[in-house]
Length: 532
Image 1 (cartoon, rainbow, N blue to C red):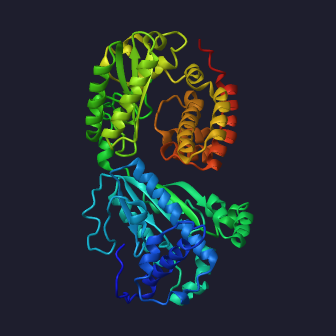
Image 2 (image 1 turned 135 degrees about the horizontal axis):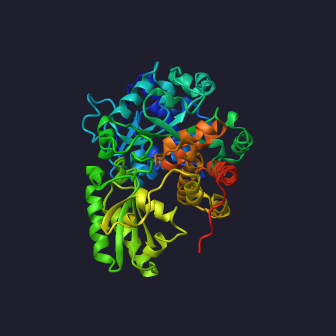
């Protein structure tokens, strides 16, 4: 950063003086023997400003807390941008924050510009960050601002540090806040409160920073209190917490992209054809325009790679017409004349990697391989066969569905599709125990939560007599019959769309909801027949 010869004198109102408080805290952290954030740019920037920072009287706990808060929000930005390279990043009220230097995200714009949203592409995923902003805005300003942002962008994430009523109230007595001369305003105790703002927000994660591993890097006298408080969720929430919300705004245009069969009346809203059998999901005509190049690239790659291919299929949100750019993944099934080999699997992995690199509108690609004989076998008739006949959209070759029966939402179908949940639990526990990185935990939470939501739905499928692949609808239908477990199933549905690395969420899914669901499933439908 360029050093200025003459120091700058800033004429700031009380609200904007808070920029100096957080800047100074980050600068002091960078000079600690074991810094939490290590933001040398903030220290350099502070040296250029003509202000008596000492009168802020920052205590060590505020210095470390501010640095840790910034680090966790930086992590959220880096994670989102890594998953969505074309993302738009908005740092609301950033002022003198150096996050743009620490994270190097795509460029945003100044919140104070007239028509400030207009230059931003609304069809790209948005990462919205608000650090220290919530309690400083008057009235319901933050709520209205959030609604404006979520109405503009289709998808993305909002990451903030939230304040309880007590935390916001106590701020006005803090010496640094009193020195600046502001009063706190907005707050909420329940982290799910923003879900009721009618802004398309769903809570993904609540990080209580008393439980953060970085607390071990605090100066020795400051470690004891967070460690003690960390045992109580209620007390931990009175300190610093990072709240992350998934943004998904369903527009009329998105609804119009649903498969034409639904609108024509060939399929009712319960996923059934006119004869009561389960209707096949998806169509190539229903693929959203943003994903058409991805599907064509998949077709070309597959046709040019596998000489023993019988047929290829799409499944998931892309052929169903509900895919969201930057959020949804590409799912495909390849059926071979004989059983796939290790070389086939290696080729499939290369295609996945090539598609993931070339198309930012997908959040990864997954290609499953199987042999025709296996898919058409009696053992797979109500599992793999059902999957091909009802959940897959033909892309290449002869459609195997023509050699398979029609299916109804019966207990037999429930047993053969998801009746092996109990057998999966030990492996999930081993993977959770062995997971060494947040990426490994997020990957596991995604697969586990998706399986649990689908199993929860098929548990009640025969009672309702319907079919759906929609995760939210699956959770709500499950809740009609098991209201006492609805909260957990909703959590699983949220995690399926926005995976989390929180060990507590994994514990809830694997050690609480999972075992209960496996036992209830076996009691209701029995165990799946053994596979060869």
